Length: 246
Image 1 (cartoon, rainbow, N blue to C red):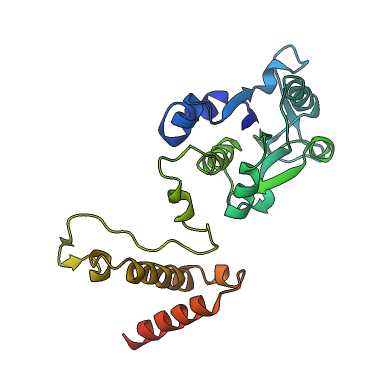
Image 2: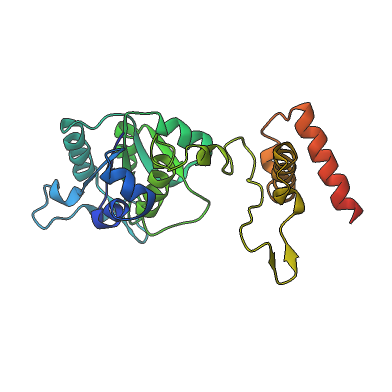
């Protein structure tokens, strides 16, 4: 997969290629990453890419020309797929969207700055707008990095154990179950006995029930979006009864 990023701060994005899962995936060719700085495509002799907003008010707005020419250069150099603008006004990013993006051969991410970009650029060149949350950042770079990281870990070969992807939160619309490791006791708290029983069926049942219960407690809105099976509903009902009996 190839990901192109239009940004005024390419060094931020390029840091993904140096460490962790994304760094290994980049170095092994699982994905390609290329950054594009609009300052290199502006027609302004001073390198300016923004101007004051019509109608007044504080802050600056990124201009159409530098961004449009940058996107044209991206496409001319082989960029494919949708142009995605990272914006607090976009749809809320979720795992389903990340999974969809991970199946594309490529995409271009537009990281805005200042008060955003000229609306005409969005109308003419942007295919989708996505947000990573209901808060405001200094720019779209961090949002782009979040999206890239989420996508890359779904690409074949990015994780050492392919099953890791299937066991994470949101994969089936639910939160993940609790995890424990050695030692078996810490400060009077013990690892649930079922996890050390060796009974794989019992362990799987416990994990499913905990996943359902944790989602019910922490993110009930997620349960409203999915259709539970009879078995899942029975496990959730059991979990709720146990909690209310405490």
